[in-house]
Image 1 (spheres, rainbow, N blue to C red):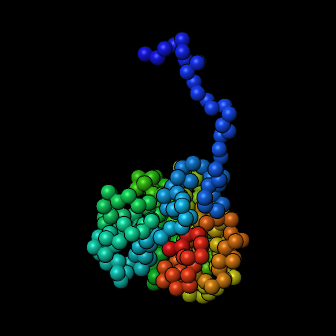
Image 2: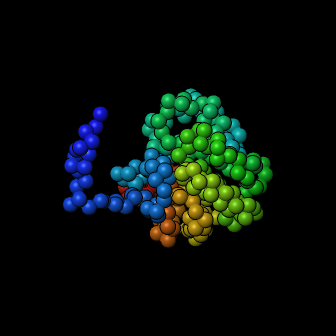
Image 3: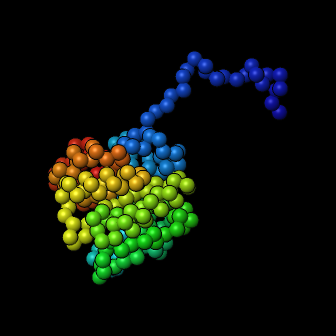
Length: 243
């Protein structure tokens, strides 16, 4: 039993030491709630601010993809070398051991195939299922300039709102259709719109001039295509989210 007579005298509040409020290490994330910050700190290294994200969600519109035919054999051995795993819920449940400790970036948009217009997507995963799968973030494709641009932005807004309610981050993925060019002007436009609509971080294509434009985006980013990242040396030049 505690000594009631000594309850007040035994306290040590360290009144001479001010409470330290450290800024969060990811760009544009300082005002987020604790849960989202904690999940982002699992995806990105708090030391470097970078991540290597192993994306194997291609089957959601490509079907059987070369190299991803057997995720249990081809991908599971690679997971320990990545910082995060981007995957569909079907592949996660059937092929990834639950003992895996890497954060999951769950593909949450879909509804089309490579045989049709790629921008015609919908929200394909309910927030409750994302919670059941312990997702650290939910990924949504956004097609700025695409035929169904308005619909894809609407999908992003719905997922951002649902994620904010439960403390799960949202990753916006810039989609490029057949008519859209992967140049710095387009990618700068697409990434800025995604950030303005509430995405906590944005995944986009590599472009030689995209990094100066990144400074106009109020959030963090991830580059698609590790070969381009390493070839140009941006991984060594402190670019956040390389991978």
